[in-house]
Image (cartoon, rainbow, N blue to C red; front, top):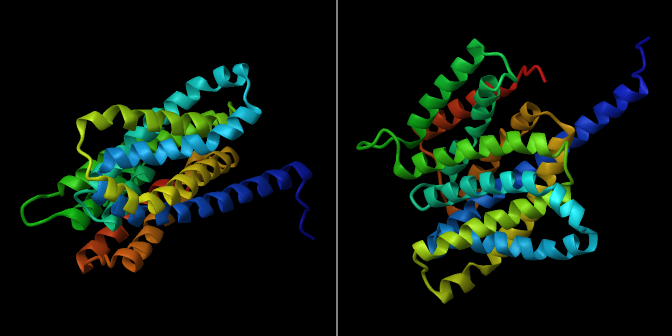
Length: 297
């Protein structure tokens, strides 16, 4: 007979399974965000998109903070919230800016390279050991990125390069989430992450142009969807899911994000990848999987 799992091991297994399911739900929601971001940034620009989306999310969270908040909790979670907010602002701003020049599908796959970067940063920080696997993942990523975005004139498009810069900050944000969710209150982290992202966008608005009030009205429904589902709900799911899983387990689940995004971009925007781009996207997914599977923690 098979030996029964002891209660503590069973509880740990259920917790990790719950975390994976939560992150899978999150990944689908993230995938839906790409076509909506593309619609919004083409209408009002990437900075106003960031400022309005995260201001709306922060305002919607205020009643929960007011109901639960106390000065001690606000101070105790401030440091982690600032770090998450700054990283999130850099990631989402570069992603939105890049999507003014590239497709939603390209942006999704390039953002997915944050998975490879998580592993590379973990190696640099001593959390993972360097291996041939990392070298192969980086090589596959490079080939995939070239096939996905290269044109006759440029080895990588401007928009794709900007989104790649955002992927570096997404990788750092994933690692930071893994650290702070085990130490701090999830609701306060969520609030600070949103409000500092919004603040960054608001401070940057004087340096960018704004289309028109009509454009803002036209994008209000997508902005509300992005604020409620892709910001408040998705960030809460990420904070909770990564509390129950390791950074690398989370990165494995995030493999599905560009797949969901590409399918939805085809349905909503009519975007389609060329055969060369499909091969490049496949190479990126392989690199993401290679950098994640077989983690030691």
